[in-house]
View: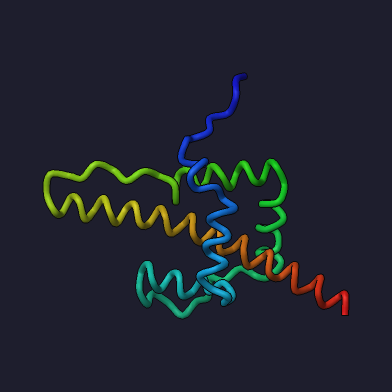
Length: 130
């Protein structure tokens, strides 16, 4: 087999930079419920936030070469996905923009989970040092 495909957009938006940008934007813990509310409005009273162990596992996966490649690929098809050509009508353009935003939101949510997992692991390490 040949070399794995590496989209040129990875060079312009590496996952570390995406993670740094998210880290700068917020110091809040991951609020998946707020994310879902942003996407679909008030749809239920159910919580969708993963438990802390799952969030830490997202970060552990991200720090491993095979896991990092998986995350990079997910970012390729979500955050880094090029914008589509605009349709012939304003309705088509709006629909394409909504699809693109939905894909980007999934990638951002994944990276927020990685970031929150990192924060949890660091917090535990700092608590053990005290």
